[in-house]
Figure 1 (cartoon, rainbow over the protein chains, first blue to last red):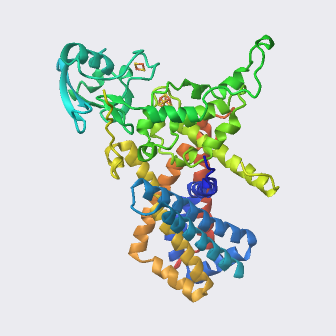
Figure 2 (cartoon, helix red, strand yellow):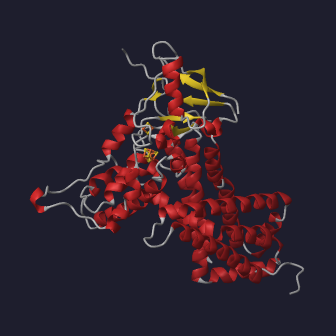
Length: 113
Length: 251
Length: 133
Ligand code: SF4
Ligand code: FES
């Protein structure tokens, strides 16, 4: 039997799932309900200050990338379970590919700041 | 409480039926009658052509599993009184397996998968009997004891939608037994079993639906075993990467 | 006697007939709003790189009722995710000497503290418009 590469996807899925379980509800309330009604200039500078710090960059990247990998993993498996008439390889490519592209984009935006 | 209960049995007679169809049997209701005993009553008193499996009548042999009102359960461990208020219950052969005849499922696939994981203690070298028994401390026993309670009834396979979609998946009980022997201090066969666990058809088909553990009549918790298998397989994957990085060969 | 086993291939609707399967798929479905939520975060970061004006526009867009409803759904999905996730943690994290129950409790407490910390930090660093300061 052939060794599966699923441990990589599963590891990222697990990290994202844990992050969303531990801070997710607070995070969604914060960015979905508090941030939009914050004083815009102050909010912008708060994000500025967060990104200025390497640790802040890392936290932000984790908060974006890990939930991406977590959710695409579930969507990928869910589509198979609902018998979606799409080739398995294509769905995997679209799911994990989009998460990877968005992670790289986010990392580069964080680095140039 | 009325004095009889309607039991609808999905009957399938190969060569005669295209697909299973339900047949109704009225069985006198008594509170201590199990579903298995009701089937025995039907066979003895109403219809000798009904086919089903059983042996021990006490949740040990694992042969009497059927779908009872859509749930995989042991016929000998389920009692009619549970369905008395509704006055009826529906039986069919275990889901996710081909139906051989009436309530008999063809569990060949499950047996193949069990064999794949070598569910016995493997020894690198046989020790002469004169050297005495393989000893084990209570703590060592504790590590796998829960997983050794499996009676191979196959209810967890009937509960698993992944096995239902593609029966190449080794499935809950086989993967549980793999872990059971990997956790056994007397066993040397772990490397061979890991090769099966590491495959797509091994632990990686599982999406932690968890229903297998709900239906298991022996509280084995196969979902726990399979997911601990994923942790073990992930560590194994990492170690393999290290070996590859050192220029050693792939395993 | 010849064998002629009856096979019923799984249908796409397999999950409709059993409440355990419906609960499972609801759990998996939390990924859909949370995926969109992650996209919202990526968009926010992108708008931030375009400067303060663009970032402010993004904040204003999020005030639309549609987005508020979406975020309400996302919070519900995330709470359901957290509850079901933590329920399963003891099955993966088996520590000799610590009961599964304690491991679950520990994660539940950690999740409450975690979300409270994030909310606290947000309240401190993003003063509400029209607030005292
Ligand atoms: S793990 Fe439980 S349900 Fe599955 S075969 Fe063993 S005893 Fe039956
Ligand atoms: S008859 Fe043996 S388990 Fe039910």
